[in-house]
Image (cartoon, rainbow, N blue to C red; front, side):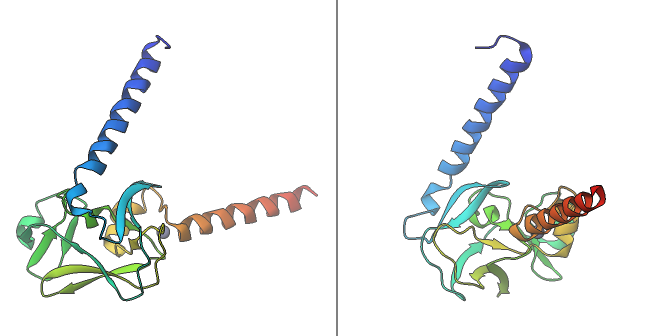
Length: 177
Ligand SMILES: [Zn+2]
């Protein structure tokens, strides 16, 4: 193996990265039983939730679960899994047991969240095929605060960027001629 410091460091980092992923995938296993129509797997941005069975439009998929905090207390906490359900309460979805926290954002989602009797329920808004990643729209505030600064990795935004790049390339070619 390469003995330079940089290489050893990179190798160690790769190893620990692999380890964390394995732990992440294994630890919530009891909740992800084979009866459920989804599984946790590697996605474009880390981990995501993927359908393992066909899910029909309108079907309930999963509950976004976590301790319920008064909004005043939630305002003091800084994590990206806070989900305000009304003027008084916020669900803190950060526990790893909350499998729904692994659902990624998309600007062209196939699922949505509904707040029903203080619970956040996620259901399909399109027919979802096995292998499809399950996504919902995180909403404007979360998008502007967390996703936009890094660049959204959803299919819709990637397509938009690709066609913008292709357009610029075609325009550059035209100028050369
Ligand atoms: Zn997007």
